[in-house]
Length: 284
Ligand code: GUN
Image (cartoon, rainbow, N blue to C red):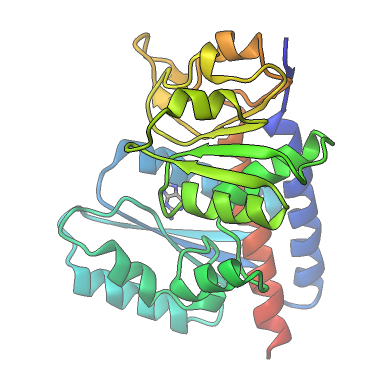
């Protein structure tokens, strides 16, 4: 049986640190504040945004959730982002993805001020991350890395396979692991011999979005398995991309869903928001 990497306990530690930093900023007259823009009716997005607002309240961070109807125009959304960029009381600006299909995600993301980009999605922050410079790290891969580090297993020299090459998870995850001296194979829907590649990985990160995608034969005995997926199984219950029961028999460490990566994503957002508030108040 694998050891469980407890996302709840680890997230609680990161949130406690963010809360302490938020309290210290308040002492200096700075109230950390996050604005979340939610356009449309995506039920999963609504759940995620509610979770983010809850964590903010827990950490002493003010949050504004700006809900806009599905038919909101791109210009209207861009104007909202511009107003939040200009509002000195707001330190973090997050536009929940996916956006309604008629809106250009890249135009909206590009419009966020890099110093308020607590998701780490703007070209400036992505570029800084690629170069290994100081930046806001994207929350999900940063949370996965913190979970890997929490095992105490030295990462340098290990072989990792990341399944999924999204801008939000897979691509930045590969970069963060590379910076830790891990050798990374970034796999996707066109990858040949995916099963064999996964079965050779010391670290397996699944960010596919399909329940049961990672089966037992894809898990090397003793591997660390990080499950980024959040899916509904055929029984209607939340589950990840990994066949947990099967992988649990082979892995050394494994993350559960729920109670895993999702909570760490939110904890990293709290960390980034407090950091944004600190940097903006220091610049005054
Ligand atoms: N949609 C799914 N994950 C995320 C995230 O981390 N940030 C934003 N803005 N949207 C998302």
